[in-house]
Length: 105
Image 1: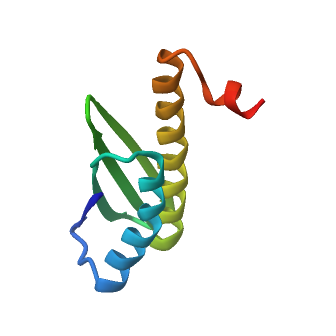
Image 2: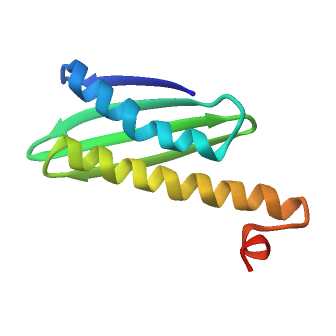
């Protein structure tokens, strides 16, 4: 998994970059193949915003989150991406004739 983090009128500190990479590493467990994540961090007035685009083979997923602190926004973004990837994975498996619900029951 390749994670690219940049800031819009915001300097990305090593601590922020490491936090993003740590949070997004859990997304790699959903897919065995290579995917790219591009994350943009910004501050709009008092809101800290985090936006991410995940490029998968044949699909691009997008999510955004905002909170009162940058770390909280990154946490929310990671949770949203996790749900999106699970939903995408379930769609892929349902095309094969089995779904996650069938396996879990």
